[in-house]
Image (cartoon, rainbow, N blue to C red; front, side, top):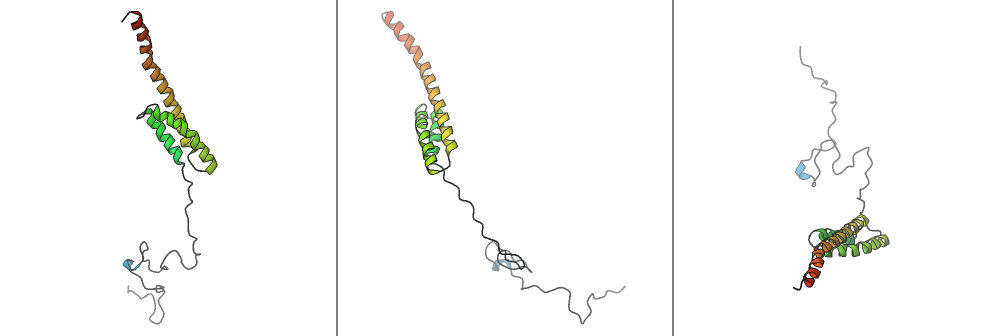
Length: 147
């Protein structure tokens, strides 16, 4: 068998040349790669519409007082017992009022700060009473015995 040329000598080749010469990747702007045979530069290709630019939705800001109330409530259970909880109980309703007026995010944080703050106040009162009860019984006993 002899190998034959698929195209006779007088006919043009079936393959079409590229629309433009291939471009090396370093000649392209940052982030675009050279693709021979395709339109260069962005998404504009023959037969396709130019896409609209995509803008990310803008998120509403979070209320700062709600964040501070939640942090104070957590500190009220660990680092600043009772003081942080009282601060959270005071700041959380103020934050919720601001959120209703301005439409900001953070209502869940304000509610969580208020709940954790009240838990901290309750635990502070319980531990305070447990600390004071022995002294309440020791003081009258010491005064009655004459010491």
